[in-house]
Image (spheres, rainbow, N blue to C red):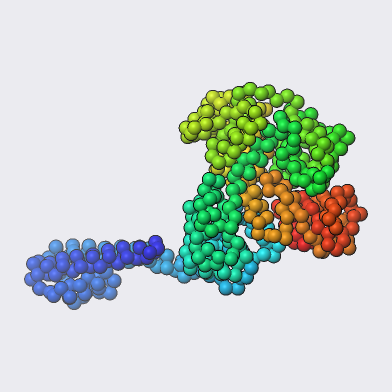
Length: 543
């Protein structure tokens, strides 16, 4: 029973009850005070006439003050009930009739992806699917959310994804895959329902706690994805690369050619210089193909743009060359003492971060509101007193592993106010929060939605090889049939799509010396790097 139906029942009960009460009072009043006995049915008629203002002349006038008062009260009460009927019954009914009607089933989809249900993490996956002309349908049980998404142009049905009828309405039997990304318990229920209906459909489940993956596999999930540990490892690597000899976050194109991101740390010799003045090419021998400036990606980067501690360089080269660039982006001195790294938030991401720091031999202090085992300082990190207790004055890095973006943004502001020199590395839930986090003072930001969407896309889109899952840029190996016979310069790939072609796989070999004169041949697969939006534009233009 929905809200309107409940209101209707309550109103009818109130109306019926009040009419019966007034009918009894009227019948007895006419007998006692007027000396004119009336039947109960006649009394009910008088009450109805009074409530509806259609008249009661057959019994008027009344000589006793008691009956006149009763009639006045009935008049007023009936008027109130009439006016109550508009907001309680009429207006909601009209709104329901005139509102958008979200479909509850689709029957025109085939080889599509069923997404249960909508979360901000689904947007990255949906963008990937649309760029590859793969249909999808979202199964969303919440009426208001389903209506809003339907009006925004999403392909959606309003149904319960845990029910057989809901997945039948999504035409699951004809789908290529199902994605369950709600919560660990709900996802397992969705998988069980999907297996009951279509055992041959690829079923992907996203878990918050990796320890629960076994239950999802037992339920029948073909693949169980756990993006939070990967996100934590990526955040930790921005700290651990300063003490390890190997690069952790490289994308290997060939044995001798790699691509990687390099956040410029506070205290680096590159801070304050332009790309042209930095001497990166001369000192490291790498090719800087793009850069993030406070959350905005540029490819190629403007040589006259000043590098700051929030700049993230995207470079290609051999391993030794990339290691030299890493050294250039690091701060000149990194004190190693307790409190060197403060980890705020001790959930799945935070625990993964601390495990990586411990493996690298780096000291850290954990701050969380709850007194878990492993938490060093119990308190709210958005309070300066808590940060001081955690050693913010001596810390070189703060990693924000908080699950709420608004809380993380405010905490970043407090951290930056507490220490102008500390490096802030942050996770956010939604991709749209990245730019705000940079404005709040963060030096490096990665979104869980980005990692999740790429992981799902890499499993579903078998013809697209997503090479990077946990970086701000996406590196993809993909065919480009619309470029065959054209040079990269003629096609203006960078200016049109915002992506850079970093390699071409041809006849089993990878060409890494890519320039505007390189001509794309039939059968080539291009290795491109860019933002998620850029990769989607490339696929739409040239795929």
